[in-house]
Image 1 (cartoon, rainbow, N blue to C red):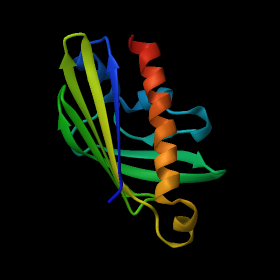
Image 2: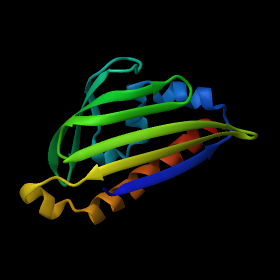
Image 3: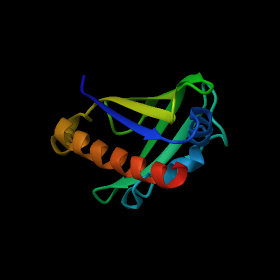
Image 4: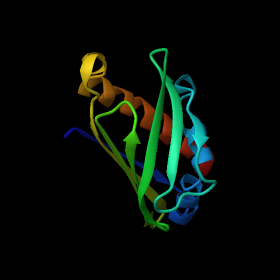
Length: 147
């Protein structure tokens, strides 16, 4: 199964970064504006079993995705899996690690492209390129907010 990794180093404590990302409303700030990411429904702060309903626009098409928080280790790790949405499989795990100068945030995305006609357009290569752009933007925004 294809996967993608991204790490960002920040000069702030891991617990501070964890708390920021544990609040779903903050993800909109960390997502490129052209995706029009919107939290339709979800808690103010994540917890194990929480469901997040997202809406975004990609290639001019509005898409909906529902993810479940499957891992929630306070200050250390957040994991979510798509329950409904465009991908055949979508699992994201964020790991937070304290360092001597602040913290590292490492994100891993494991995915399978959608099936059917959509899968002809949204290939592994397209998804990987989009993830590079998304996580590059996220690293830039986190640096602006936390460094």
